[in-house]
Length: 403
Image (cartoon, rainbow, N blue to C red):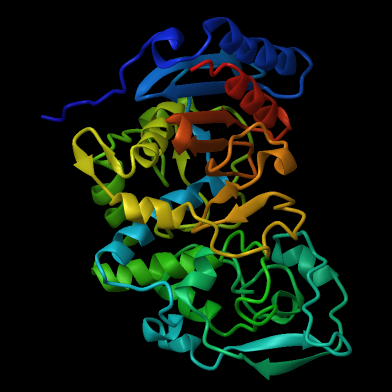
């Protein structure tokens, strides 16, 4: 018999927050719904292991006007990535992999991967494309280029930090013959094709987002090292201990009615029900991701289960890329990047409402979740449509802290 575990609810005042100031979250979400900027959203806030805010606003379906539910299930898109990050940290902690390990140690096809360098670019990659689709890249004019050897082997660290240059929208991506996973593909069948490259730049020399490819290579390494399919590893090692009962790559039919009627963020990229991406594709609820984030704010433990040691959580949430992330448009001043998560280093520069040391990630469909360890705070924002609202909510949450 399965026992459902829940985070306890508490009043804002008993965890050092102002109930009156937290009400601003409801006002903000209602405003965005009424203005038609979002269809609906679920927002959860927990502090000191107690949920102090969990509210749903708007509708699941704009046609039927069925109301948004607190247990609505949202396409997480790239909010999937921190789950992969935790899975990787487990194997790093156990000594089964090392961040500095060459990828070719586990996937031999990566040996000899090269870098595409646009001629006349002084070995600088041409990362002008913000598109993630192969079709859009094909429409661009491929610059004259040459292939050069890598200065050093591609590593797991490079992939976890988006400093690998693997399908990040540059010259290498444009000349690559890689297609999306097919309808019968798995990580095992597709990732060796990724290894044909070429890379967009020399590993470790810059930060550029690999939205749908880089972390899937890590997912495949996890399969190889653990001897377990990635989805089963995540289910038994993360979802089950955290009682993330509504988090799936393939949503059971009896739960489909809880999903907002919107475009599937997986779109045409993932067509195979057997392709379990570490980059995108999960569907989840505010409750489930609150459990995930609360485990991180608790330094790796929840419900009596230790998933990671505090040192592993610290490694994951420490800036691993120097100034490379804050020099990019996706990062910006005052930010760092750890293993699959962005980090607020200097709140005065980021102006994202978060406090120093807060870390998390977001998805293209709009979901955002993050943890502020020093404040023992977790925030989950579930929506299907990106806006600036989560950063405004972050300010409201920060301002609600009184102790």
